[in-house]
Image (cartoon, rainbow, N blue to C red):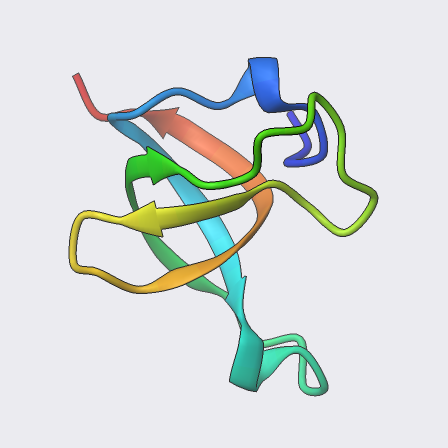
Amino acid sequence: MDGQQRNHIRPGMRVEITLKEDQRTGKRTIGVVKDILTSAAYHSRGIKVRLEDGQIGRVQGVLANKR
C-alpha cells in the first residue's frame, strides 16, 4: 500500500516515512504510527504522521500491522 490515502493508514501500523530533513536524499525511517496529522483524504507526497517515538514525516509505504 502507498501512503497517499488517509484511509490506508491507522495508528499501530508499521510504516516507512520520509522526515523533512531527509526529503532531498529520500532516506526512509521505519516506525509505528501514533497519530495521523493530515486531515485530507489524499496527499500527493504522502500522509503526514507522528510515530510512537515522536518523529514526524510523510508515509511512503505501509509495511505491516504492529498488532
